[in-house]
Length: 390
Image: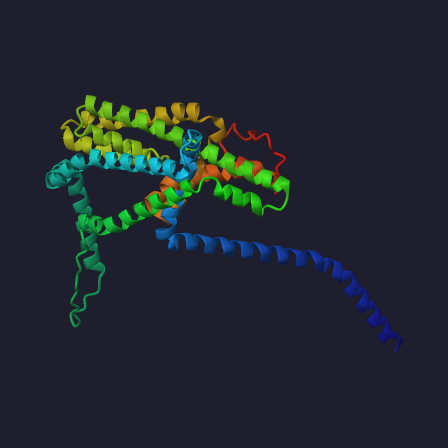
């Protein structure tokens, strides 16, 4: 009996000793479960963004454009113009700019479409040597496949091949959807601008304390100001780059230099990838235009030099250190949003990064993440109101 009591006493002591050691295990399990839920939630958000892009893309564009043009609206309102009239002026001006750009591109694009067979023939002539090498490799692969494949004469399967629609057919079928999204974006932009500061007033009303109200307005206005300044400055820089590239293409004897200028302006809104695509297109057109390879590559070299000067000198000088972003983060963000929203995703990727970084600057617990998004040398830039708390 005494041994049994002693054993029970020993087991109870052991259980009391092991209970504290179980606490870290339970904590780790709870932490793992928490991060698993967070990961699943993020995956669901990404899936929703990708699945609902036909709706979310024009909404995102409308909100970004409203943030960009809000200072213009306030300027017009200070001139005693109502919000509805100011919004109508802004949207009408934007429609005129879009129409001007499309009319500028219409003639060069039509001429390129008409000359597509000739361009294809010239490209085939230029790349005939490469085609011969590739054909030899393909033929060798077919021979190896025939040697290693098992012949089955008893069964003959009839293959049915379907011809996919051409590029022009795909473009024609996508035009109505594109026009609908553009119209939706412009209408949403008008309503957002015409509402004035209504959303800021609603934001103030839902905040519980005066400090929260002040911080919310401060963060909102700072995001609007920085995003507007960034996009306005980048637009001017890209316009200057487009003019420089258009003039250089004209001096080098390239066809349709205006088209190259407009494309350079549009491509440069996509960091890194836009410049690569522009250089590749310029090199291809140069090879089709000139007979000598060295002369044919001069336009692409000029395009590359101008984009490097813009990226390394002009943009850092005019944009400033405070809005410079981590190049790796920019590249990954552009790739992610391109996967989610295609071309529009690439256009809005950097703007979203600027908004996220500005928000992080005002939240002490997120300032480390904001520094991670910033470029080297701009980690210590914090707003004066760094005491802002959530």
